[in-house]
Length: 171
Image (tube, rainbow, N blue to C red):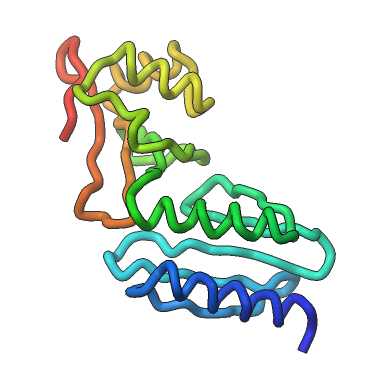
């Protein structure tokens, strides 16, 4: 058994304590070993990749990978980030165009950063601060009928923002 396989098994065991209802699977790929945390709510699985060369973990919640060093501090940060997502403390934002095309990026956001009420200025500031879209891109996309998706681990809590007339609405 390689170091990467041992690491993947240890990580899977640690994740099992955090993700009590999720099926956790270890899946070798051509270059990596992937630890899959299947979402029992029907949402996207969390994919965590490791290998013998990069000395880091690559975590993919949906689109944009996040990287954590392969050391005790990085491992603790990875477990906290996954735990925060599963517990609903963080969500990810993405954008879907009016033609139902997903943009290739998403951003993790602390749930407390979301506007309490739909507000264009607050949403624009959040998207800019998180580097999801610029204000002009956001304005253009929303006026064209695109939506900003807010995604939770518990998919029953998901919602989106869209432009209705001159106001942002949550649906």
